[in-house]
Figure 1 (cartoon, rainbow, N blue to C red):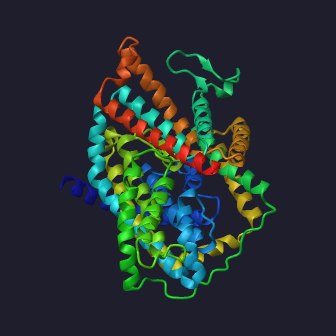
Figure 2: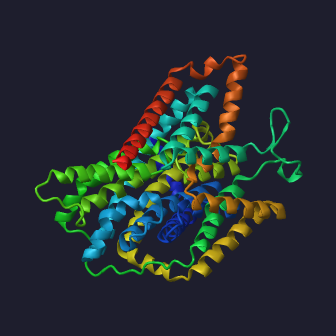
Length: 501
């Protein structure tokens, strides 16, 4: 009952005209960015980060959460209509969703995706309301050793799962950790990797890194592929933008299974919602094989419903893990953790105690965002495809301009613009050669936490490394990490065996 009372107070804060406006703006921006192939919520949040410092923290995070959820809706729209997923989390939706669109059922496919995303996100928000305070209370039992174990779990699990090549994932992680160590060591006062440049004594701003790697790097990558023409929209889209009762009944079990699959992955740091969406699709495909008339490959509505519900339930739980544990499980969540720190806030139990107005207004805004996105996407989903008519030179030139303005506005230094350019080239090279971005961002954000935690743990134990594995919580975390690594090795062996055959 206490959680419900606090949630009602949160609705009172979120339903003010100003905060409600930010919910709508965030959902619109997120959906619009998600519709653009190659763009995503992580880039949108990175671009908005330096532009929202003048906002009240509650308004800023309500805006970010709307962008986060809206990006998934937009990704699905393009995955269905054009077979062009905006982000990897929408790839599973292309398999059956685009076949539905090609067969003249585009409106029904979009409705299936919108309702599935609403169900998954709404249920995840309910779970977060009741379990985020429990997770926050649990995190009070975390000491330096436990936080180090959690950071190590995020590092290794993300690096090994989100990339087809484990070495590439680890290389991206090491690069992020290396960037996070640049500057003056806060404990010893030693210069680290500054090359004697005074401009680097304070380190490299996370805002600069996120904007360069996620936004400017994407601009350079698109420019390098400018000669490739974008596929035209050829799907037939006439028809009713709703589901018949029979279609709804067909999709309902898949929405439920997808939501159940996605919820745990909101806490497990495996890089976002890519893994649960594929798992949900695979479960439905296996179940379909047992039916008298298999539908997969012909536009099966369950093959679209399950991944959509899984992706949004993962995102909703990821926000709960971020608020309660300070654990980012995706690149977008890592950027939002950076935003918390820019405002002088630290997610975790202290956030619930010190800033309850912000936390519960933000949780209430999740429900509002789900409703707003359903209203936006059900009747108007196909109108978002019109944004693709914007010529790419104008679109990406505008993004590059905002990158420079945003970084310069936060520091006022030309040196940071040079860093932006250099790191943007690094982001381009990572995309060009298939290096994942999420490990870099998580290494950059959680690197200082891991360093501080291991130092504190060793200082408190007079250098005894056994303190790192001295509690049941650390045993549990390392056990889960071993399971993740075992599955990664197993999948790698299976893939190599198939290639050899």
